Length: 172
Picture 1: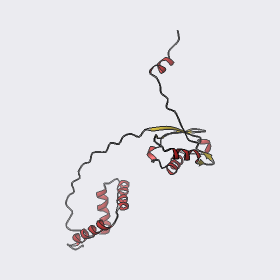
Picture 2: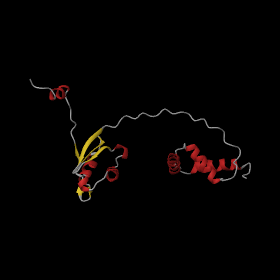
Picture 3: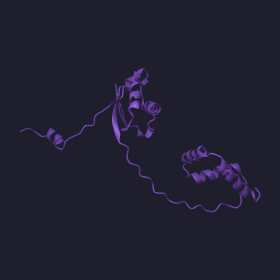
Picture 4: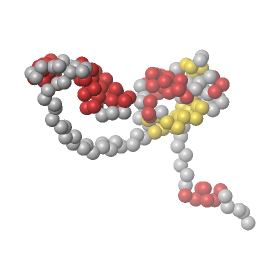
């Protein structure tokens, strides 16, 4: 059993740690663990504390924590641009390898690689529109299995209101 004053000892130790140490890595680890276990970070921290004091009772029990609901932050949608790569199934590229390559070579967020369509000789995909020109030029020369990506921006097709309707009309 932990002594009655152990709660005060823990509090003192935690104050010293919070004052003198950088905890960003530890915070990230708790968030990753909580996400992996599908629990909230507070439950994860409590479980980690119980690992440290397994079988012991820490007194007094902590007061209930009131969680303040936070409005989800609404982010503006990222404008996407359609691209063509000169690699496809014939060049032995698969979805995961392609995503990993683009993340590694361009720094693009994995979630911002969208609508990937790997064809026989080429691949179509969408990446964020604001790709810097130096990264774009770098991706032109990146090689996969001995083949250059040779990335190209595709032009957006703009349809006029009458263009589609006239195309399907019969001529009399």
